[in-house]
Length: 124
Image 1 (cartoon, rainbow, N blue to C red):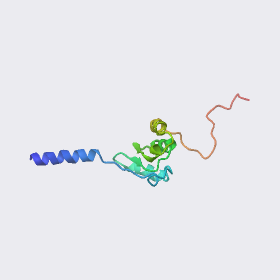
Image 2 (spheres, rainbow, N blue to C red):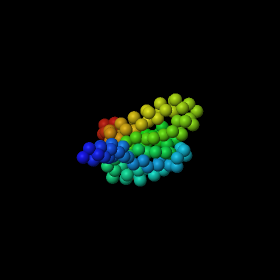
Image 3 (cartoon, one colour):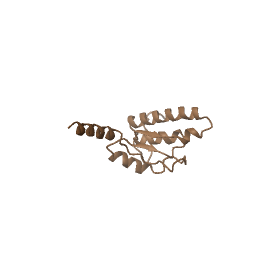
Image 4 (cartoon, rainbow, N blue to C red):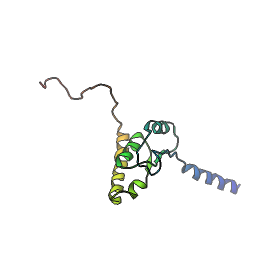
């Protein structure tokens, strides 16, 4: 019985670390998220965290990933090859935080037409 308990504990620890890690683009390319629709579909169906891994080239790429609803972004080359790696790391942190906040805040719906939110009556 003790062996079985130890095995169950080990399985639970392994399950806690499972995640889906789609590539944003080829590793080290810095091309950004090449297929955001597919990543969004993965997020909607996943029962484990989704972490974008690879392809992030700049802070705006990390923001897009987080706005889609990703749980995190893994990166190396974008920071390692930046002219100022410390500054790029700070930018990436801010990007991930702002993208997550935007996701949690809820994006307005996209429209095919203009629909001003300011009142037009009495302005002219």
